[in-house]
Length: 120
Image 1: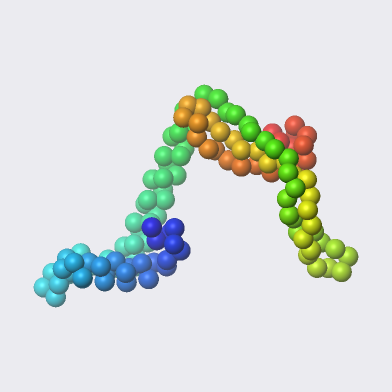
Image 2: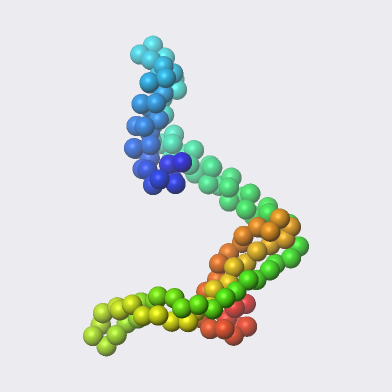
């Protein structure tokens, strides 16, 4: 949850401490359940590592890969002669990569050209 809402370790620890104190988990006599920013940082790291490993396990089980692409007009930033970036529209190809089994999303690709070499 902390990563989703971009809450810092320090702010997240303060929120967790306040909630635990409100629910009576942390009292002046019992303070063994205190969450500090380092404890929260270690927990975040371990959850990220666990989720990354889950992703690698599912990638190893892929039996087929499907591409679904389309060409559309996309706004892009283009450098002009005056040295500034300006918005322009360009035809770009977009590909979604799905895997089987389970029809899971793998990636989104925007190749530099429509050539097979660039897409691969």
